[in-house]
Length: 146
Image (tube, rainbow, N blue to C red):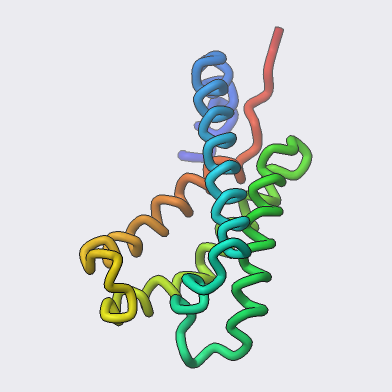
């Protein structure tokens, strides 16, 4: 009988009002800025990102630069209404793609003496939270009524 609840889902979304919409918009802007800045940092601080790369991956510098460009572009895409859904899906894919680098960091804390080992391990669940955050923007907007 869950299918009977479906027609009412949009009605419930409409009833939430503009407060939720404003929170989602602010969250989207924050997420966009975070990813744009992180992407730019790939170019500014390439050496750090090169140390993150697992040794089994080829072409470390191109991968660092491509992932940085993708992060920045997807961050900007989140700000463009017609692209935000696709940008959010792109960020989810990117977060999954870079997860091995985060595992590599956690498994080799000696390569990152400037970062506490606990912080390296906390990056792993942080990836899940970022994926969850981005997933909010993959859903269609509720229909607004006058």
